[in-house]
Amino acid sequence: MRESSNAGRLLDSWESITRAGEVARAVKLKHFLKHAISQHSERTAVDGESAMTYAQIEKRADALAFDIGRSGMNAGSHVAIETDSAVNSAIALLGCYFADVVPVLVGVNLPESQLEIMLSQSMCAARINDELELYTLSTKSMIPVPDSATGYLVFTSGSTGFPKAVVVSERALLARLRALRDLPGLHTHDRMLSLTSINFDISLAELLLPMTVGAVIVAGDPSLRRDPHLCSEFMAEYRPSIVQATPSFWKLMLASHWDGSDRTTIWCGGETMTNEIASRLLNCVDNLWNLYGPSEATIWASTQRVTDSTNINLGKPLRETKMGVVDAEGRAVTLSGVMGQLWIGGAGLADGYFQNSESTMRAFVKDQLLGRRYLTGDLVSLGDNSELIFHGRSDDQVKIRGHRVELGHVEAILERCPGVEEIAVKLVERSDGRPQLEAYWVGPDAKEQELRQWARDHLIQPMRPARFSERTSLPRSRAGKIDKSLLRTEHQEC
Image 1 (cartoon, rainbow, N blue to C red):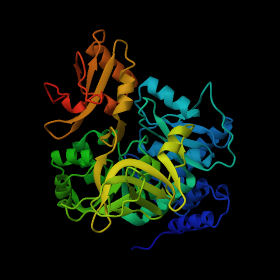
Image 2: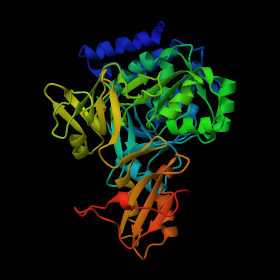
Image 3: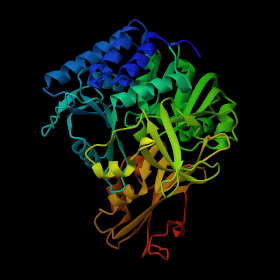
Image 4: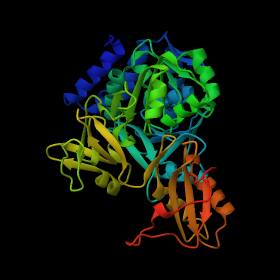
């Protein structure tokens, strides 16, 4: 293991302080970040479409923090980050931390109706756009929480049609940054590509983790996420040593004839990595890591270094993280090959869902022996070497291009469209292997064009069905539930 920087040692000391029982607010996240940045003030912090030193990025973050403070917001107030570029996302995060307010990871291009729900549900007092302009809300919620140590809020799909805001503490965030610094590992000489939009919590690994060791954030135009040819050219020019993306993205890159680099380490997660993708990536990169973790466990929770494309699993828990398996009755599963539900505990666990005690109590449980845990809903089994093998979901949650989507969420939104009596949404695989959603509805007064417009107005793009099909009725099982396995469309392509 290569030697850690001064910032890395500070991260160790921060954890030892909080472990020793001192009040968390005595060592705020902003103090750690300020110290880490000061250790590397003249080093390059950002390269790519923009070039900035750590001193320059700190100066811009300080200016934003000053604007936030001048607005009259109290410590602990929630501020929506609606940025798209990597540089401005990093500055917005730092500005919030320096001003003692809580960043809410929102992003851009949301339907106005969903954005309003998210801002209201998370009680945001202000918004920061991609020009780093601060807008206080006319109905802003001043949340004075002087003892609060919340690191950020991030939204997940909800089965009721309303997103849930996951609350992650500063301590959980610092613990996760500490773990990822060690494994898969990031060091001062590394260059990490910032490819993920801010509404995903894994973007914090690209934006904050490099700052903890004085590494470089390689920032490209947001169009790189959608254009594999542009991304390939950008990576060839700026040579990031670490690139984090979903299997779907890497499939597009490989299809565009990207030939990789023997200097590149890939962090791959957010979806199931197939044997085929693993095999092709192993042939064109230096190191390949499979990462796993829901937002409720802060960024990532486990990782496996993939060396054999026929052996892909969730690997082992990250540092200070616990993972285990329980059966339908909540009893521990200890035998290999027996399927059960995965739970996660440890230092990186989120606090719960903001102002949603019912969902929090259902998903986060307490045990006298194992402590507080999050029940993921993912079905896994233990392998012969105690590694975790993923088998799918226990509910109707799916992953589309890294987005965690509950089909019930999409159905609840579409059912509100005037004229719709009943609707079912399922995930199908196109002939090219890419996933898409398809919707089947009952309601003679609802037209497909109206449904599509409703979806555009109320759902983000990955949640919008690619195909709609009208039915006179939906097939049901003997128990009376809709049987989605019997739903078919005439065509499978978009």
